[in-house]
Amino acid sequence: MRKVLITGAAGFLGSHLCDRFIKEGFHVIGMDNLITGDIKNIEHLFKLKQFEFYNHDVTKFVHVPGKLDYILHFASPASPIDYLKIPIQTLKVGSLGTHNLLGLAKEKGSRILIASTSEVYGDPLVHPQSEEYYGNVNTIGPRGVYDEAKRFQESITMAYHTYHGLDTRIARIFNTYGPRMRLNDGRVVPAFIGQALRGENLTIFGNGLQTRSFCYIDDQVEGIYKLLFSDYVYPVNIGNPDEITIKEFAEEVVRLTGTDQKVIYKPLPTDDPLQRQPDISKAKEILGWEPKIGRSEGMKLTLDYFKAFSKEELRKSEH
Ligand code: NAD
Ligand code: UDP
Image 1 (tube, rainbow, N blue to C red):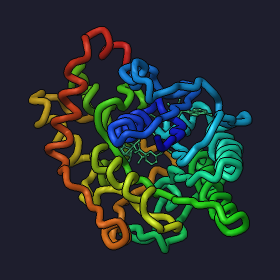
Image 2: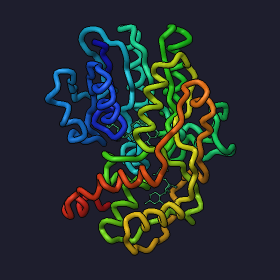
Image 3: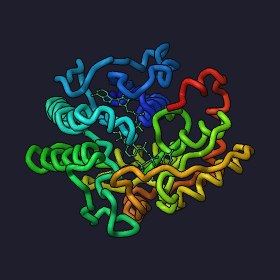
Image 4: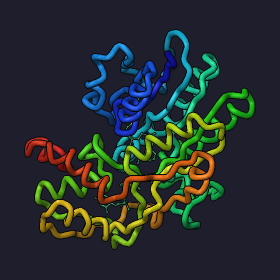
């Protein structure tokens, strides 16, 4: 049986990847220190013989017994409020954590895919963003801890590929949403849905004219899966190019939830990118992949997940 190690397994993306690899018949080792994740996301897998869980901080030496065919390194805080709260851990998991996992891949002869991000493009001066764009990151700004950790992660991964011949893949993931996001992780999708369900005003940061392009989780997982099994070692953007302003998105959430919440405006966080849209030509050409689930369908599925929360859970998720 092929064996895969997934770090960040108790998080949003990691838990969906665990499900996918279990479904494909792999033996899955999930690893997580639960700093931003939730064990509930993978509890349903604990009864399976095919699944193991290691509660471990990947910035410390990583060891797993036996053979290991694949590693997917997804451990890292991913929402701005998380990585602003734990900036040093964010830098360490992208740097030391990635180094440990590359070392493990080298020892075991595993193929390794790392979760990079559209944040490597920073506040982009080129639109849409293709993989050739080098980015515009403020190294010492508050978001720099995440962006630079991910840029270092890409560099060390390429260095292991070039100098040690390691079999590597780099996914540049754009804003992804869906069930199992943490209601209080501060990202705009759970933030707006949580506010609407609690009967609060939706908080738009800045004038709301900044854009994002949201990819539904099932499409993202499919893109990552295809990239892992492709031969392509350079970074590939995985995201949905359907771009929308945050103001329009707030209006969509109000309509979708059938509430009559108002929007209120709060200051735009420092270095918040003004425009973001993936150019996915490479993913289309190399992986034969493009997203299939539109925002209206994906948001309905996401809302259904959050609607099942009790009033108490919703209240606790206020921040
Ligand atoms: P998440 O916070 O839900 O999951 C991250 C998981 O990593 C959590 O379970 C957390 O406990 C774990 N973790 C963090 N530091 C760790 C450490 N030192 N050791 C072990 N485990 C640790 O976030 P997510 O949205 O699922 O993001 C997963 C990955 O995908 C991250 O690497 C993130 O940078 C990347 N990514 C996500 C998005 C997105 O839109 N969701 C976009 C771009 C990139
Ligand atoms: N945002 C907002 N209100 C919120 C949370 C986020 O207007 O309550 C904005 C945020 O400033 C950014 C966009 O929504 O412009 C996406 O934010 P998110 O944190 O989801 O992702 P990222 O900025 O990392 O792309």
